Length: 350
Image 1 (spheres, helix red, strand yellow):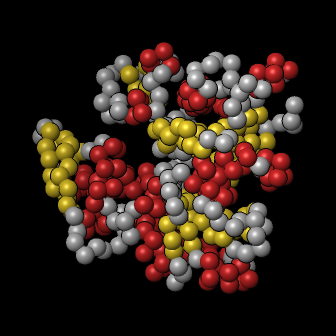
Image 2 (cartoon, helix red, strand yellow):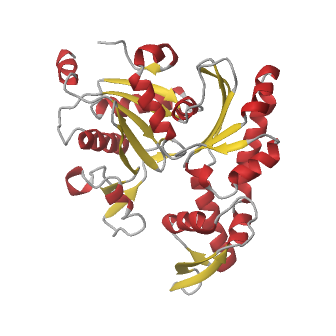
């Protein structure tokens, strides 16, 4: 324990947005220093990471859907929580070493953003993975609080700040005041479900099988939550389900919007449910302060418009929505003494 503390003096403390799709790492005083996909390539049937433990992140994502039988490219997090304990540990260890210049004896303090709705068992999995990856102390902060802080919302003031953080695996909806969460709801419906809905649509309508990366490109290219003046179209390539041969098809924005109706509708429902639970004084604040949208899912064209129409409130996309959770963990790192009472830790200070 003493050795780990001494080694910690030479380590760089880190804030981590451990996301289903991407992992972002912030360093105190430097901002975001790493932004890579949460993907690891391993030998099939084992947890042995390829390329001497370096087939992680961007390298591994390029392998998704393209690996031979002996290799599997996997995403160790599902719905915002750890689905594969050992592989998550390997991934975190790789990111920690990369930030520290591949020094193997780094033992930083780490602030990790987690979904608000995870269980105690799921929290313990995060603690264990980070500790075994080399962290000397681990702090957990709920994603909505980190997102609100990173977006520059006045969450410490006695007024309501509402954030809708649409990530890859979860959507977090929270109303915050006085540095804490007043009301929060979390659903495991987010960007990945939108990709799945698009892939299923292509199967049903075009008998075309596509991979997750292609579905994501369709979502970004022509996907929307509300009608547009001119609907774009896009050529999609995949495998014909009948002939088994490679084929292409052309889809338009209207079709994809219809395919996305269910996951978008579920997100709208959880926002409305959260608003219905808010105390009257906080609800009154939201009439003036509105709703702020963060996360990659918030970039879906027209998402802010459908939320504004459903709620009757002003809805604004925050600056740099993809990175606000990570920036929030960095702020917690910078002011640990101030925030210590509002975040969870795995142990007492050494």
